[in-house]
Length: 474
Image (cartoon, rainbow, N blue to C red; front, side, top):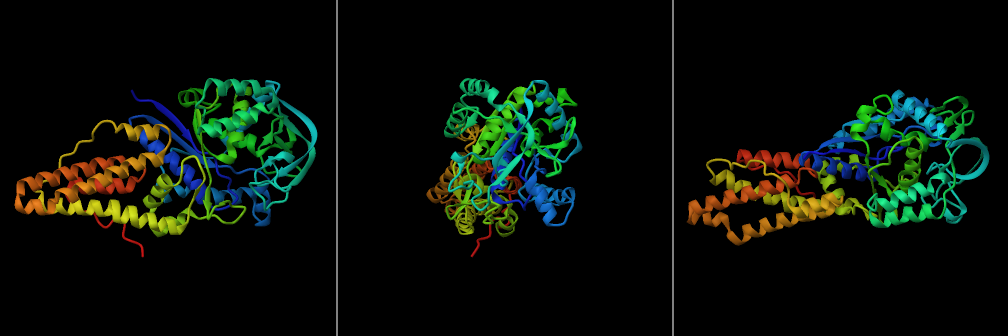
């Protein structure tokens, strides 16, 4: 029976060009969405851009641009990822959209009506890179460990706060009842321990005279919403809340993909805010690690990022998707270098899949009078579905590459290019068998390498050798 799946990435902050760290997140989400659609499920896949906050405001001023014009420019760059990475998302939300801002204000009102918003004066250490308060215990040598290149700032003003401390019992009960709420297990344990240590209320607004770039606080023109409060609401505004609750209820709750630096915001802060507003929690939160370069964390603020468009230009979309999905661990930090990309491309795509497809289809084109008849089989192998069910794209692709190796070994053992000359009928039967098995492998590649899968399916069904899909890189 078909199911409905609402899937979302986090919204990247539009203070710099897209980088390969976010490409990892959105490609993982896309592969899962494509797999579920292939399985017959109805999917709504959301992504977009986070466009408010002090970082963006300051960068817009530095560039001598209006903040809206600045965010328009960068949002367009992120939306270009749809073509660059061949993404299948259904919705691209911007937190500057009028409908989203209206939803954020209604969400504020509901939290306020629940008695969970109050005003107070305070003084904190603040990391602009994270857009988060930092306690002394979180610092390393007096700096944020995620943004060690940035000086911490002191915020000393009167703002609105959310009663986060009130929701520790709710969150601990949620975690107790739903042991798979956060994946992987070690991230689930991490958020449990964070809540068990006790929660502190957090500020959810900023003085407009100091930082005017944000959603206005309802009923107080002197304040704008803190970027995290505003941005998280996108997960519900994207599916019609609050103006179209029928559509909202037909999709909610959501499965979220997020980076490990956002576990607190996604798995605790946002869930408490949802409860305050009278809404049910998210369905599941999948936490991935960072992409590193030579062992160092990639980040925009550190200036050591890799542009995904540059990798696509050099190796192609499906090659990058393949690397991210098979050779980057779904839950832990993994290294990415252009040298490793080249090695994987030549060894596994050019010499592996590309060579295998060319050998089989050259034989088919030469010796088979008719293309193979191959209707779409139902279902997928258990090892494949089990891996994807636990969001382990790498393990699913390991299975597919195991099938590729088996097929390659079968060609070596049976030598169809010789058999077709000594016994034409047996040789043709074997070649048709090989083409059929190649087709089944290609079908398994569809969520991961959609263009490659489509090209090879067409070639097999037309009985033609495909063009050189993965020309070797020297």
